[in-house]
Structure formats: C-alpha cells, structure tokens
Length: 423
Image (tube, rainbow, N blue to C red; front, side, top):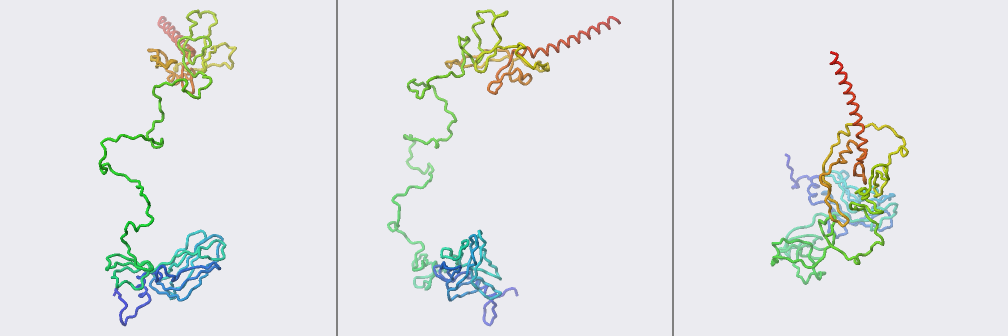
C-alpha cells in the first residue's frame, strides 16, 4: 500500500516518521524572540562565544540545552571574514550539536547546509572576525536566531493564552478586535486614536507635490489675468538661440564703456575714390574719366589685395623665374558656359539697400573651378571670384589647337583638289 498513517496504538513509529510529523512545526528556537534561549554573546576576552540554554526544533527533531555552552571561533585571518554559529542536526549520528561555519575572508557569510534527510543547520548568530584579531567582542556578534511559528488564534478575554510569546496574535471576540502580545500586555493591533492623543504632531502640514484636473476645481474664474511675477531663465523652455534687436535708438551719452578710437570695419564705398581711400572691392576710380590711358602713360593694370590695397599686375620676365610650359586641355575652356545673372542687393554705409546690376553677363566661379581651378580666387577659404585677365591665357591653347586643325584641313583640301584636277 502506498499510503501510510501514524502514530496509532500498538504501531511502531520510526525516527524518520516522527521527524516528518514535527518538522511541520517549523525549525527554530521554541521561545519568544525576546527570550535569551540559545542567544549567542561574547565577552571580548578570547576567540570564544557563549550560547545560552534553550529548547529548539531542528527539522522535526528536538534539542534541549540546560547550561551555558562555550564555542571556540577559528583563529582570525589577515582579512576580515564572517562566521556563523549553528545548531547542526546529523541524523546519521543521532545528534544535534553547536558548530561554527567558518567564512571566507573578504566574502559573504557561509551558506547553511539544509537537506531534507541528511545534515540540517539552523543559524543562531553571525560572528564578524576582524583580520588578525585575538578576541571576539559583543559588537562582533549579530543576532541570527529563527523561532518556531508564533501563535495565531481567537479567544475571549477569559480564554487568552496563559503563557503568550512576543508577537502572538489573535482575534478577541470579547472586544471584536485583533490584539497581540507586546511582551508585557495584550495590545490592540489597530486601536482607535483620538487627535489629542497623537504626539509629535507638526504645527502645519504643507501639501505634498500633487496635481488636480481642471474639472475638480470649483469656482474657477473664466479668465485668469497673470499677477506680476518673475521666472528664472532655466524655467523658460523653447528660448531662441539668438535675439535680433528690434528697431530702436540710444543717446550717445547713454552708451557706456565706449572705446577711445574706432578702427573701421570692412565696408563699401560709392562709385569714386577720394585721396587716401582704400576699398574692399575694385568699384572703380574717377581718374579715367578725365585722362586718356592709351599709349605709354603711367596707368597700370592692378590687383586689389584682400586688405583693400592696390598693387601692379606685373608680367616682365625680370619678375619671374622657373618658367616652364603649361599643358592645358582646350576642352576645359570649351566646357565653360557664359551666364546672365542679377547682382544681389548690397547695403550702403547708412544701411540702405542698393539694388545690384541686372542682366550682367559673366561666368560662375564654382562652375569654372571644375575645369580651370587656377583662375579661381578664394577669400576666407571659400570661392570668391575669377581672374578674368587669365581667360585670354586659357584661350591660347584653344586658338592654337584650332589653328593646327585649320592648317591640317587646308593641306588635306589642297591634296584632294590636286587629285581631282589630275584625274
């Protein structure tokens, strides 16, 4: 038969069967948690701890100690470790004894062995063993006892448990209330509390952070005019990255920290130059309107430097060295496309926008850079303009190539005419 029941009269009951029966009562010290039963302590005079008398259940087996026991802690290591004092059940030896589980230095406390049919260990305390120590003090011992299950029941005042343990809980049918044993008396688990009996009340109760839906607010006004207030800059979201000023003016006297001198910034001039002027771009000169520039006069082709100054465009061999042939593909010149375009508006000195030239014919520097990068000018690392004066140089290989082609065609034509006339 697969079903066994016990104990009954005239029936042999084994240790294993009794163990299965009583282990349902749970392993632990059979006492109140404020009892000294099996409590571990140390005097700080040696590497030993003491264990008080008590009664306990260990996986269905009972153990009774009637005197204080002394247990020796293994010698300290160089690093701190944590040991455990346990009650160890050994069913094979039919014993329950006090034992010390030595921990590993620098690691957590040792694990308990808790098998269902062999060794079973019930922890009583943790013991911290400092490195190189020679004694265990009370501060090195940490409570680790477990207790058998507490009592939970129901009763009337006249039938309360006569020897309650700390934490015993029950429903008192005389008072219709849950109560527990606090170590000295039965206390109401959920007593009625009057406001005057509450101690250490704060004088005021600031509300915790919370929200309300608009529908929960009564007597809300139809419009809410903002009162005068301020916001920290960090509270404002979606601020623009820049703030262009609106049109306004300032009195000169209201401007503080003015510099003593004002070096001119890059700017433009009108059509004519006056004595001593420099310009950022070659906008022209009034001199050619009154003087001829043909012949061997003192006029020169000029370059304009990036700082607005002028210099002569020289071509004499005396200014040059390392002269060599420059090979260029005529197709690069033929790939250039003349364009007609409008100049963008520019601002005058007073800030007034001046319309640019309309219908101007020329080349686009970015397009020229693809084929003839050596005639492109750069400013501040960006394509800026063209050396139109070098376009004539660029055209020479085209003309020379076409001249060679024309001569070759003329020679072939003459040869063909000779063949026709001789036929």
